[in-house]
Amino acid sequence: MITSNTPMDDALAAIFSGTTSFIAIALYIVFAVAAWKMFSKAGYPGILAFIPIVNVILIVKIAGYSAWMSLLYLIPIVGFIFAIFVALRLGANFGKGAGFSVFLLWLFPVFGYFILGLGDARYQPRAH
Image (cartoon, rainbow, N blue to C red):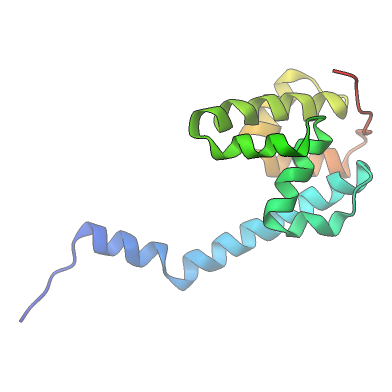
């Protein structure tokens, strides 16, 4: 009996392949290193950047929101909009403008976190 692979079978094989998992882990490590530097500037232990849910909670806290508000990320449309607000407040707390916040903290957060962590930006929480 001859079986043929459908496009869905090929897609599932790619998703669960070892190469895809390796790339995902590598990208997560790069994100965690970038967040580590940013957390250190904000006065939090940098090692917490490697713990998946804790790093999101800390990013929300550094932005100036309550840690409980990180639960808003679980609501589909609300989470998308809340991510923009977090990026804007995070950029403001590090002295960056709205353009930097939208493009480098929301669209390409790894690059933005590296710039905040390794650059000359200083964390100064603002009263919002």
